Image (cartoon, rainbow, N blue to C red; front, side, top):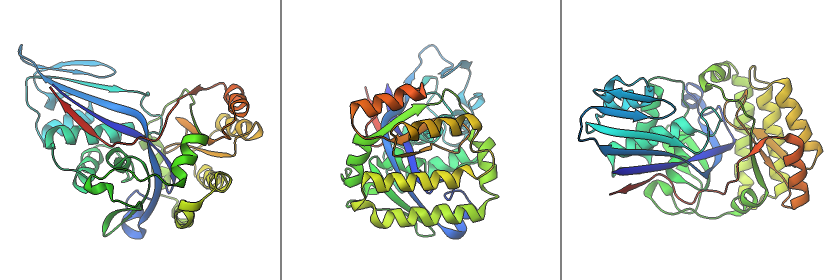
Length: 318
């Protein structure tokens, strides 16, 4: 049996600029962190023959190449899995939450068949796998591989990671000032809704002017990230949310109300995770129990407790 897990992520700055053709033309700066909530992929041989694929539904198949699950089907056709087998996909959160679950799964699928490759090659293959069937940027695969809190630069030179040791070579995370801020101040809330990212991302590609502003803000934050204060980081989050919400289809009256309620009751700043429309809120809230309880109660949403993940994609075998 093989068990692969990859962490989900929260993207703070630069989201949308990692989509081509914008990224290929202007490059991208992404600031994000992996969280200790995961996608799990298990594989084991099936002596009775055939293939059983289990996720939110169950498929009994002759081969995974005929699966209804688009990522599994694509991976089976591109790489081929050892069959007959049982494959199971489990997630700590529902799909469509804006936490990069489909991209984390793509990383798991490539890791299952490739094994050894780590870093940039794994990111590129996972992107190619998902891009074959949906609109996918570059950023979501990076936290699943690298873990930790990082500044990513994406351009014609490839991926560069702004921490002391490059996790593309497999080294461990480097704890910075923002690492402590996120773990102490961060709160994550599930809105109860989900969306297909493709339905929202199409509008991002028509908004180069807004994407220029989002990239410029990400560059500005990246220059001072090692010494940033919680209050200053929150101000930047508020600014990026104001930019993001001006893109058609990203927000709604209900979401705008939730954001306003959180801010009125003690949150310093925040943003909606992922492409928009629904999913999860990320807020910075002072680490006082009364303030955090007030924000939690006024929103009335399910909180997802988390810490920054210290390890990227991992494989265990029995």
